[in-house]
Length: 227
Image (cartoon, rainbow, N blue to C red; front, top):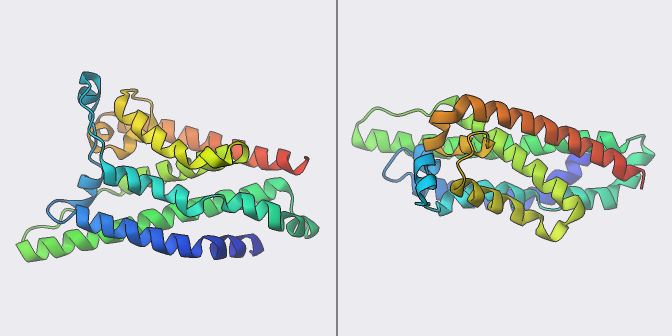
């Protein structure tokens, strides 16, 4: 509880401010079309192979912001509060487990806010134009949670070693994905044109990758305690 309290106090202002920016971008993005569909529009496999890559700026920002929201919070918590937590019987691995849950909660809250903003925007458009409301599949939101959760884990793993460059990792992965056509890349899940082709393969690859990242992060926290 203490660890969670310090974490949310630390990221509270960033979370509120950057989430507001994200919600505004999502609303503006969906002014004329189905919001979530537009957000997840990217470069198809065929276009990537042909070299026709379009960089969707809002997509890039929306999926990078969660890593900025958390930033180096866990590293700061480790330096400032782990000795206190250890005095209460916490181990490094327990610290890592709680951090994993906090990252998952952050990803869920972030995607939930996007979902609410997209649904409200689409509902108001449907009412004003007297058309049927198009409701996105829950699978699309699950894909977003998995990818954002994975991005947070990757960023925190890198942050242990190269703190200054950690926030550049996700934008690099996103841009590299647009240029690549690897069907096993889980990031394909947040590109609509690719997800319809490789949904099952990419979803399993995403789940496997997240599990591996979780185990690696908790193991690293335990090793860090011994230093």
